[in-house]
Length: 60
Image (cartoon, rainbow, N blue to C red; front, side):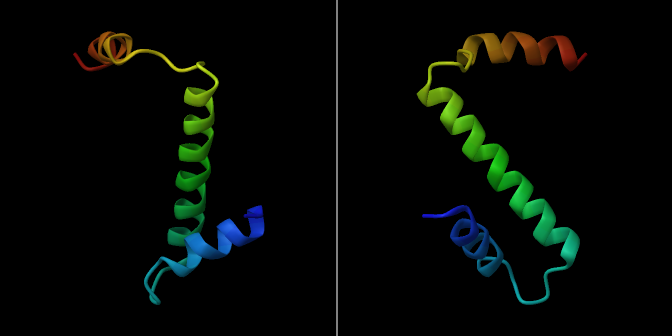
């Protein structure tokens, strides 16, 4: 699937009354999730335990 086709699919999945901000946000979130999935496939992610440790530092 091309990037343009993916973008169309994301936009088509939104309700008809979606705003331009909604569309931009949905495309951004989709791109970030794709990037994250690619990182995981390349073994560049961090473990669940490491993520929990990092989160504990942020949430105090």
